[in-house]
Length: 357
Image (tube, rainbow, N blue to C red):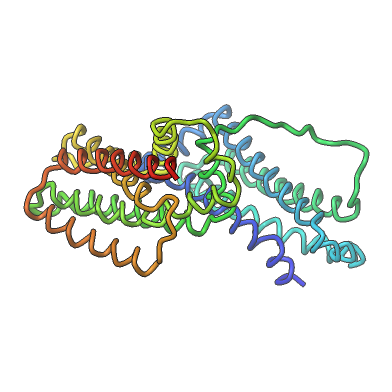
């Protein structure tokens, strides 16, 4: 029974929220080092106020897991789980405890780190509070999930439904995060780890700035499929977009904001891992260059039926040509100008062609 429940609740939960976990990891561990995290944990162990803030964040994560379980129980394909409440109470609750423990694994892992540091510094009061709170989270989650199972249509209370207007620029990033998390994880993990690795490799030998440009080129090519994904997303959900009275510059600006959001984690990684030998302004130029070339690839892919084999061939050819240009010393300013001017020129041309037809 337990493997069956894990396939229904645990696996889909982490698959659905993989993009969210990636963003949190990039923000938390891409921008802060392990030593800085340890300093924050030490401060929280010595401050009840900071420890309460940590507990509140864990409580919000618990609510997210409970919400997911409740949604899964209410879907038509999972209505057969209503027979699960016929299992003896002790056995059923024990199964819920295991499922809830698996759902709270990120919280338990971080709590384990805090417990280890609390043991080192002999913060027994904070250690006891952490253990007691984590156990209460597991028990509360299991109890609420079991209550929902036994009361599939509660009518005694209803949580308020908060809604807000989502700007257009967030449409695709939100869709990518919620519905294609594996693609997001692979794309951003490849790009982020590559840039961080190049920045860490740079001081180990007598490298020049061409190494950073090569890493940037590979990170950009790792996003080669995003333009096609955005085009497919709009063809499926935003068919009316092409008929809106927007100029080519307005459309280009909106896509620039979308790619700016997508490319933002790379800026944090570059700033966090910037080698001491490299000026900060050069790192900014690198990030702006990558942003421009993402726009160029978008202008090449948007609205076109591209054969995947030909696109991959073009990406490989672009890598070879770009690598040769970097080795011959093409500066980052030239790459920046080529990317943005090429994106604007191609977009203007394609928009004019679509408008005339």
